[in-house]
Length: 299
Picture 1 (cartoon, rainbow, N blue to C red):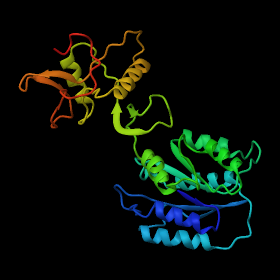
Picture 2 (picture 1 turned 90 degrees about the vertical axis):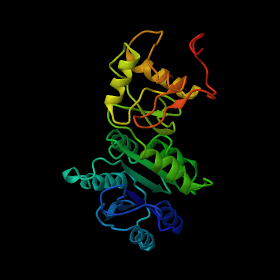
Picture 3 (picture 1 turned 180 degrees about the horizontal axis):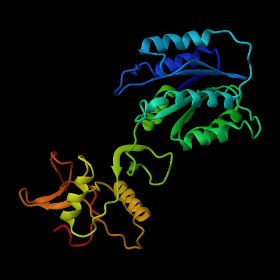
Picture 4 (picture 1 turned 45 degrees about the vertical axis):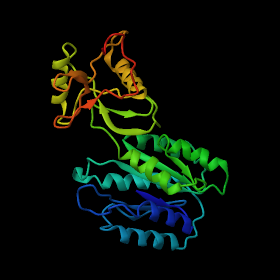
């Protein structure tokens, strides 16, 4: 969902560059659907999520929309967010594409509160609680109040502004790519810092298993959770710290915390090896920089 708020060519250029490499289409798969909402005092749905069948048409349309004259000089972010939410909801009728992540990219050059009834921050919070991410892009000619307000609206770590050295890259890497990196229900995503909403996300998911006795039983139970599941590896201190905090928060047991990891002695190769998904070669422990093991364990 893209929202254009000014006729400034810089905004249109930024949007076009962000989506230039996207596969915008209505075809199912690793594809993108995009709609356009403009707003001022009121909001207008220019194009819904079924409007575009290819990327070039979308990019050309963005510049056409930006060139349209308007006499509306106000900026009511609440109306824009509400219209964008409606477009996203309509795009999910009959559970269409309900397995993909949704996002709103909000471009703004002004920010003002409209009272409690039309509070954009409160509406944004409701949107985010529904699992929809919000990226904000501020064009800061009106000063710091704009950026401070947009931070409250954006998902954690996804408030950007036009003074960024690589604004397009920030939106793509730290916005859209992060949104599209997620785990199935019941799994916790590995991030650069446990419990921090704005932490960088990695394509790795953790889940607390039910088997807590023998290592071999735990290994098999883990593999049965998913066809790519395996006992957790702790290849460095950061991964260990995350796993430790994850187990501490989920296990409900007092310390000391004891859990199975995917390290075992491989008889055939006569060395310690880390588990990997079934069908993939295990990783040797030798040469690993992380050696924080109990004394006498790895002899």
